[in-house]
Structures are given as C-alpha cells and as structure tokens.
Image (cartoon, rainbow, N blue to C red):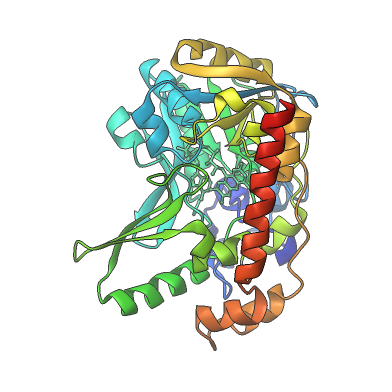
Length: 390
Ligand SMILES: Cc1cc2nc3c(=O)[nH]c(=O)nc-3n(C[C@H](O)[C@H](O)[C@H](O)COP(=O)(O)OP(=O)(O)OC[C@H]3O[C@@H](n4cnc5c(N)ncnc54)[C@H](O)[C@@H]3O)c2cc1C
C-alpha cells in the first residue's frame, strides 16, 4: 500500500476491506493508528488502496445537500443533556434507533487511556458512547461488523468523525441502505494517543494514583465553562477548567492532532453523514432563548434520510430553525481545516525529551493574564451590546 502518512486519517477502511486480514492498525511513533501490512498474507490485490477515502473520495449515498437544514436543538431530558458534551442530541437519536430494535456504534473508553468504536444494543451500555473523547479512536474492524448487521436486516446508527463515516461508506462500497443512519461530529482534529498517555502518566505521578476515567466535558460549571474531570483509582477526583487544562491547550492549539487533520477532505458541505452534530458556539448571538448554558447542539440535517430520523424524535427535543452560515461563523470546522501548527513536527520530535509543561511553554504558551482579561472584557462588551441592540 502506497499511502503517504499525511494522507492517512487512521479511518481503517483499508484494514476492514482486506479479505486476507493482512492489515492491522497499530500506533505509530507519534501515537496515531496506521495500517501495518503482514507481507506474508498480502497478495497485493490493491483493495486497500481502492478503499482509501483519501485516495478515492466518497460521498453520502443518500445525496447530501450543500445547504443542509440547520437547527439549534437540545434534549428535553435534562440529565441526558448534562451528561452529554453539547445538547445531548446523539443520545436522543441513539435511543430511538435502539427502541426500534437497532444497534448504535460509537466511541467508548476501552482502557484507561484508550478509546475505540464499539457496538451497543441497549440503553445501559449507550452511556459508554455518550460524551466527546478528545483522543484518536481505534476503529478496529467495526465497519465489518456494521456490514454484517445490515446484511441480517438490523438497523444501525453509526457515529464518529467525518473521516470515519467516509471510511464506513468506502467499505460499504457507497451503497445506500435504508437501515443505516450516519452521524458525524463537527471535528476540530483528533489528538495523538501518545500525547494523551504522556499527559495521564504525568498526572498520575503528581496524584500518586492510576487514572480510572476521564470526562472531557464536565458541565458542573456550565457548558461554556466546561472542565476535564479526572477520576483516579484511589477515589480522588481532579477537575480542571478547560481554559487552564494542559491537555486542552495542546488539543485546541492543533499541535498534537493527526497530520491529515490539517487538510481534512471531509470538513465541507455537503457533509458526509446524514446528520452532523456539534456545539452551537455563538448561540447567544442568534438564538439567545436556546441558551441556558446547559448545552445546545448545532444539528445539520444533510439528507432526507437524516431529516426523517430527526423528525421521528421531534417530541424529545427543544429546537428552533437556524442558518448554516450562523453555525459556521461560530464553528468554522464545519467547512474547513484550521491552519496547521507551524511547530507540529518539532513538537513531536521533542515529545519524549521534555515534560508537557516544558513543551507548552515552548510551543503553545497559555495566554498572559493581561490577554485573558482583555478577552473576558471583550466577551462581556459583546454580550452587553447584543442585549442593548436585541
Ligand atoms: C475529537 C473531537 C473533536 C471535536 N471537535 C469539535 C469542534 O471543533 N466543534 C464542535 O462543535 N464539536 C466538536 N466535537 C463534537 C462535540 O464535542 C460533541 O461530540 C457533539 O456536539 C455531539 O454532542 P452530543 O451532546 O449530541 O452527544 P455526545 O454524547 O456528547 O457525543 C457522543 C458522540 O461523540 C462521538 N465521539 C466521542 N468521542 C469520539 C472520538 N474520539 N472519535 C469519534 N467520535 C467520537 C460518539 O461516537 C458519539 O457519536 C468534537 C468531538 C471530538 C470527539
């Protein structure tokens, strides 16, 4: 297989499509899943290269719309909403598919520092998929499982990043299925497993206990003031506001994401999935009545198939019509990749040499107290102006 690393989104379509199971996804030196070929099994049939959605772009077989119906929405069930990263719409859709006898595929924590796709068929296990995990997920051979479930007539809701949804369609051969619903998230980029593991190791040293679980979007202080909540085996919990979190500093500065995220082929309209979910950042500007700081989702209904699913859960959500331009204004990742971090290569070259504190200081320092105060005042003035004008 001849696919340069900068074009590998780690979607694992190649591993799933290989009839001889000659490809496994393994972590590379930077901590991203890459195809590794067992030369003894490989017969050079070329199926892996043909399936690669970077080599051969795929489209949503249900004909996605370039100007999707856009809504701001959140789950009526407040506990679901508070446990979810945004407005809890993923859970509402997933529960509907489960009630209909289907299964849901999404990302769960599979080990203290690892995340991957799993299939769930009941509401108790659905809790494992809830919430954003800001680390690259191991897709494994889950597309094969989806193909097998569709073959036996099960309904499937598949969720993941846009490149993972593209990977699934590539493996399915772009065939439309009335039983398959796809949901992609608005994706900022997927961070390295190695960076996350280093972060956890350093924290475990300070806190003298092994990490048990992490909630990347704890809403105890509200949706906009979310924190990372770390639970240790000792029983201790540590909560760090996202603005002061070392890990979020690295993630949001784009220095530790997969190199292919710098030029993502699937951050565009039309979107690849039937439904796209994200945070409706900027909600107060466009729909202040929808913001109580408990989380509001932007929902893009990209296909008729997606619209039908969302209509089926209408009684479970609070919603209002919105405009895709407004959603993009607060969330440019819907349509484009952000600029690559200029020091990304140097950061990874030095990853084993320095602590995260040292790396942050060197490559993506936290803003000074003066800059933070300026940003806060500017935000406050914006809110006052909107109240006066509105
Ligand atoms: C790496 C990453 C980057 C993101 N970047 C943005 C962004 O820039 N802007 C924005 O608006 N939203 C972003 N999101 C999405 C956002 O955080 C919420 O997940 C989304 O709005 C759905 O929220 P919810 O409340 O409906 O459901 P939730 O229950 O909060 O989300 C669950 C969904 O997220 C999926 N998921 C969780 N972790 C992963 C993962 N590691 N890889 C693939 N899928 C995963 C699950 O499969 C499930 O579909 C990102 C999410 C991830 C994982």
